[in-house]
Length: 68
Image (cartoon, rainbow, N blue to C red; front, side):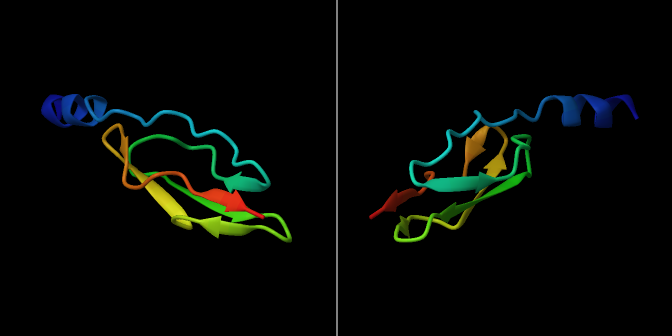
């Protein structure tokens, strides 16, 4: 049991992502395994991934941007 606690405790969170200009971020959990989704406001198009997931301190993709 102690080993399991040590392993879970060693998994790093990811850095907090900024809100995209002209868009919104859905998700406030930046821990390992968490997924954050992105949406753009009307008239803007998302360039990049719809969602990204934290994997031991690293996001699996770059945060998208909203282009108008």
